[in-house]
Length: 129
Image (cartoon, rainbow, N blue to C red; front, side):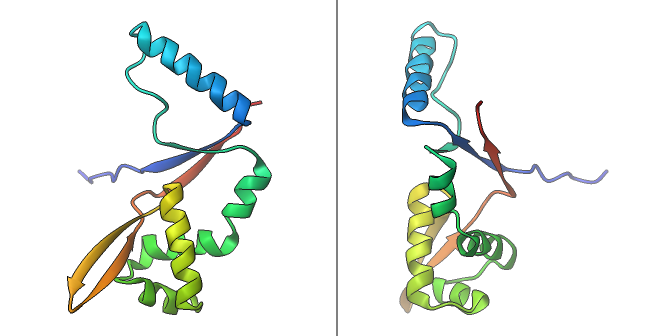
């Protein structure tokens, strides 16, 4: 039969800092009681929709898509693909890496290069009401 690729998703949770802290305390309590094994699964937390919008600009989303589908071998190549300056793209890549949206791999063939990697297919946004 056909092998179905597992769709890996990254989850974004939007909750205030207070809600986030309360949730964390609840997780800790449940871990203590043995009901949970670990704290929050792979989720990236933003404290407001505005903060999410500020960070996840169209240009940065375009970077994630380009890395995922075109698999550039360097930040320079990525910058050429999206028609932006290497400096700007480099800053975005660093920010996205810090946030947990991508990983980078360093190579040393001649001069060191940074290869950006995205290993998920979709971003899911969860907004507790």
